[in-house]
Length: 141
Image 1 (cartoon, rainbow, N blue to C red):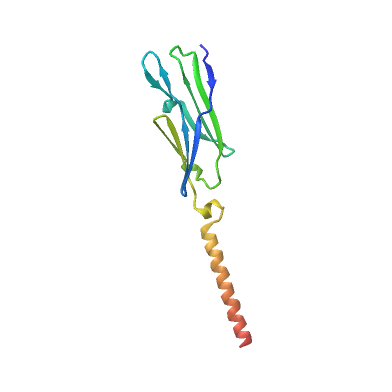
Image 2 (cartoon, rainbow, N blue to C red):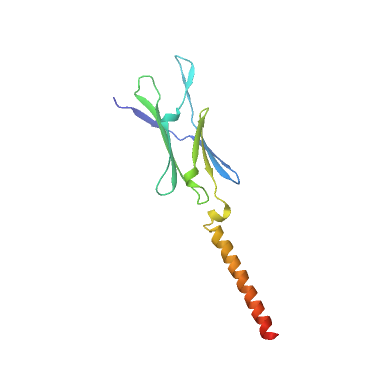
């Protein structure tokens, strides 16, 4: 039996903070007439992936009727900033909202600067300036 899917676009909201970005994806439930309860997505019906091109791909699909002939599904794609620590992205699903938490790198890491190398270059530059100053003082002196 083939399921007919109705595509939908869930409401998404960003929460930007200094140390992380959080994407909230609101997934609607459906009131079942017979049982008078809300049937929404389950965690197993959702996928959060990071594509090889660096995009965050979030998708989900579920059956929407008891006969298993109709369903709902969605797929959203977001570009992940280079300041995000990609291997530490995590997701939580609670009360119909999927939270995708994306920790940020430190500012130097996000800019692609090696902190140790930067400190070392600064130390070398300072040492060179001291050598030049001492050499100049000796030459004049």
